[in-house]
Length: 433
Image (cartoon, rainbow, N blue to C red; front, side, top):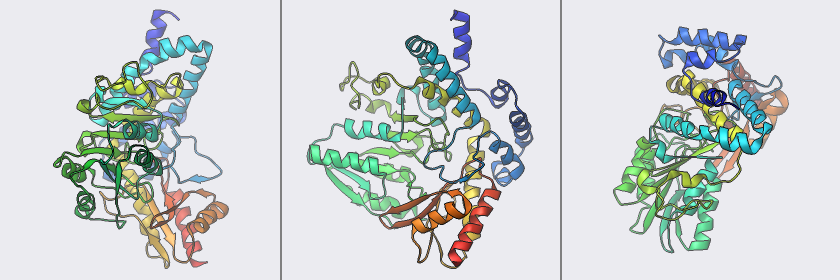
């Protein structure tokens, strides 16, 4: 490959503006229509646009949606827009021409521009961002890398993600740290109450508080900053699980008061499956041990890149993250947040007064966004899950954790209200059966 061709290829890895992003395509009809819709939307606010089905129809055309089912489990793994999937396939084909050359000498050169783009949408320095494969890898890097000793206390919640809970339990068994559990009555619309539940668990021995920004079980948004402020006032560090909040609604990582933060990018950013991100506050990097040993893994290495020593990895997946960022920029974070909140409230408002229907997620802004959980009195979550799929081909997921039992509904920007009308009908029928 000539130097000129290499430059052109690397340029293609960058983030585009909305117009440039679309003009770089072969211009299929869906992209031309979306370009027009975006132009017409420029003078309208995110809240006004949230319920405009014509606009969001053109967004839907950017995805390859299944004609056989309605996917309402985007909180698990979201499909990627066509432009992201096509980029991944293109980078894979490119890698296969001569893997060790094109992966290490060409595609790997796109990592630093990608790091800068991830830092931009995260509101932090590129020197605080490490590219990972998922939220579990990012958060377990922190959990296993923190220099804790026997007797040190970690405060966490019973509703935290199981992989994180198990990682902390492993440290408890191996290193003798003590886990202190917070319980919450959910859903909650009281940030003071939630923050106080964490704060009252702090003691002189507390070193870490683990905060899940959005509980995957019910979509509850947790007041991470209030908890972090209370922790920092006592010299306690914060680990924030942002798997279900990043690119879901607007915030910056520093605004959460996070010392450490991990997220998946294949959820709400809609990057390809197997992509994630780790944030470590710059002055915390040096003391944190990497999960996979680096050439200089010790506590004297303040370089964020020490957390990326995975060995041979799927470069084609990693580099496609840039296209997902471009799509996210094109839609706009505020528009996305308002649409997701609108969709959750659309179906929840329609079913909340149906006899036997019980909702487990707040309809108020700031306490929930896209994710909603519903149950039917006298029926199991599995019963409703099976009914939705067998009778209406609606794909959801059952939740049975602690005191939370129901079906989790997670639409995304490609979901239409017509899809949700089908869900509303199905829930109504099941509740009456």
